Image 1 (cartoon, rainbow over the protein chains, first blue to last red):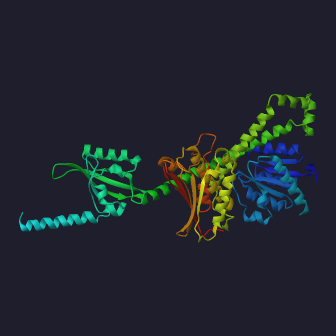
Image 2: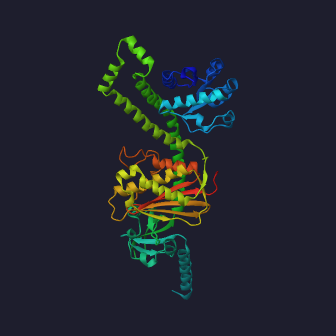
Image 3: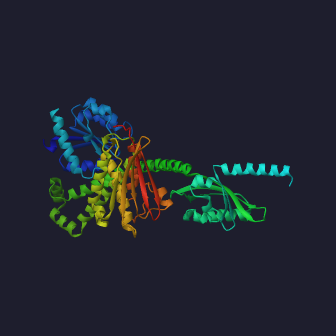
Length: 129
Length: 396
């Protein structure tokens, strides 16, 4: 799968974080869209049908945990990654939809090439589901 | 004196003697030079010294050197203001330890017209220990909460610094078609731009931004230890084997090697033979113990040691807890340092050598992660002893 075939949805309430990750992923050729809140993301996710969705945990409004559960019901084929600045262990609900500790990314990601690898792996795995 | 009044006198005398000699607290009198003129029987039961060691001897012989000025001031004030004065100080016990005592003394002119100070002293060591633990816990809860909140707030800006530095590096690279296209549009040769950036050291600057950002990030991720609740992922572990491995790790520690040859330290192992397996998170406890050993080695390296440097690792069972003691014979620390040693960012080392997070992370791992306790005792000039207490019933 080419990167250009992989759609990524990024949810973070901080614009600067959306900007720097989007810039990197776009340079890698991914199709990247972003949302500033869970509510905004839920409006568009069904239309975007991203292969991978990366969501912040602490969002204003609905938090990342609840967002992923809802988004999963709309787009079950999408692979969800949680991006967080706090030590976090997955809730039972997130485990039920197949998330593992590997799907939790600790902020700040020092080297975005690692995120790229993770997205590629996730997209490949998602396709086989 | 009539026989009757003599009898009354002796009865009264005997009653007071009984009161004084059976008191659990030490009753004493001092002359104006600070020499004991009397100590009650409790002197022996509380401190283990013979009464004869005290009477005729100066209080300075028994009181901790750091506390002598305070004690002197209290006696002077009592005498000058003719009032009762209270003072808390460390006093020598016959077993070699220092005990905390509080005494109240009042000036008194005896039947011969001689001015003395009479007083009562009692042991407050245990009360102070409990107070210290409570203050420590409250302080750590406050500081930890602050550190964790700060860590969370700093992660996003730090992410932007690290990741945009990476974006800058990539957007001047020739490997990305969009870069070549934009360069062509504005009419510059990207190779020449790169040559310029190279010549002016800009790539190095960007590299330094990333290195510095990563360093900050490591500090922040250490601070995150404070925000966590209880530990999951604990396993039942053979503590003796873990301690051996930690000593091995300490011997190969690069940072330690730079400053200090760990092989020069005499390592004593005094492990309890009957230890059950202990529930703990191996990597975390290794971090705790390495940190303490690292500090001990550094302290001994920095001090002019007149004796062979020694670290003793001891384990024992006590009241359902397993105790790990790490004792060194280094320079020790004063009371002010000891009370702050587990605070985040508290460091006695020069700036750049230490972030001052090591022992506070150890504190968080032991108390929060393992629901244990960590304490330190120290005698300046003699050494320090850290005690890590872990519960035997864990969540593993």
